[in-house]
Amino acid sequence: MRCEICGTVIKGKAYKVIVDRSELIVCWRCANRVGSIIEVIDLSSPRRKLNKRTYSYKPVRSKKTNIVEEIVEDYSERIKEARNKIGITRDVLAAMVGEKVSTIRRIEEGMLQPTIGLARKLEKVLKIKLVERYEEEEYDYYSYSQSKYDITLGDVVEFKGGD
Ligand SMILES: [Zn+2]
Image 1 (cartoon, rainbow, N blue to C red):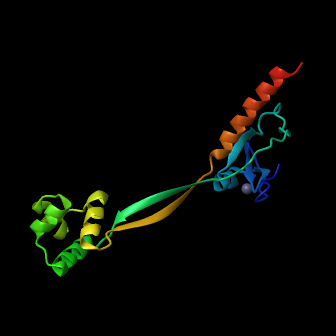
Image 2: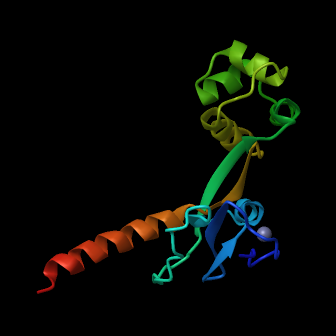
Image 3: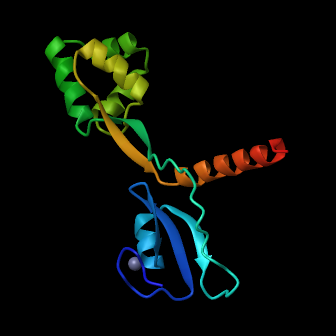
């Protein structure tokens, strides 16, 4: 038996994976690379025949989009500069955002990173940008095993319902 991706002779264990909606029997190295293993085939067991039954897998990569919010690196300079521009003291700014003066001082000195909530308030009052938003995409390759489970359940129901 040869790996259907790289052609290496497979000894011991072969891995059934899904690549572009088709099932392939591959070596462990390719299986690790592809990451969507649906079955491990033990070639060393003589009684084990390759399961030729085809399932109607829907290998849809579930894509998760995470919104990541981050405080800009130079938040202290931006706050200090904007406050001086408007011409208000730290005390006034602190009162406007409902924080202690010491907190504002530490933020302006770069000793304390404001929380997203406080940064939003400061953004509004000072009319500056402090929070950066970006999207982070994550692919869940393990959704395959979920669809396999669904099909197994379906088979059981079908079996019970037959005469
Ligand atoms: Zn291979």
